[in-house]
Length: 430
Image (cartoon, rainbow, N blue to C red):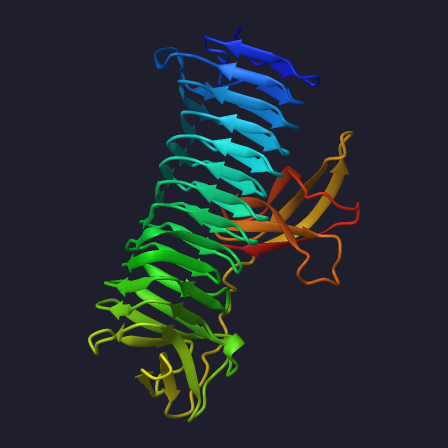
């Protein structure tokens, strides 16, 4: 059996199909091949590695208890989309590689199981689902995103020039994670990532208000607590050999300041600490800001500079660590003067228009247009049916802007809910 732009449906009343030869040989143009496995149906692939060329332009849906397994094949897909939807739906692979703008989405109680996994310039969304894998690699601007209570269990993970987002009470368990080059790790409030070692390389960033639960965090890149502002917790020891910790201050109340909480030792042997005054706030003489709170030893030699952004030159300050309270404090010695606001906002991204279309099966798809945004910006789309509840927003998709200007998004599935829908966007990068 070979699909060349055709379609294959297994189900909806159970059934099983096993193939032992290459089953998709789709050209790089013309119709897209599609496979759907639904209602408890089974699709088993048993192909020797030598007989398994990369699959191009395939759409596969595994829903309502359908199961797909690859017993021995390292499977490679390009320019393809694979969707797992619903409790009992499962995709089981020995080894997996996605390239060239491919998308793998596991949602609503489904499960993805695999050995080593690599995403190169592709996306992997885990939305209220579970992914259990071996080693993980995200490269070439790839995106791995967990939300709505998603869960990922993996071995060693490498994030290089990509985005790893953990939001909305999602959890990640790893043996270790290396954040390399220009990569970004975002851990949202209520979410956590845990393991033995987190290494943050030069040029990379860690941002958010969640918890980094590692025995040791070693960094040469940038750590930015909060989401303008907020508290980032490192549950373990922290060492900064290079790079910087960026702490935003928007006012005198604790909730208007970034906080870095460390449950173990905090050791700064290099790099810098950068204080960034935002929202036109300027400190006055006598004000104090408690910004770093280690539970163990605190080492910050004078060779590690503390720099300032957002104020006119001339502001003076002093820093001190109080061993009794375990807090590193910045004290204002004179009145500061805020710099004028930037003439160009950090991101001008806006949703210009959108429309929701309900499919025959009840699925709601949203399409729309947007304006603005610099190149390589990643935007998270969120929806709600109740504007009066600030916590009712649900994330449902990501957009990556490849160029400045306007554009469109088409056919992104919305979370279940009433017909009335409101949309907003949240810029994750730069």
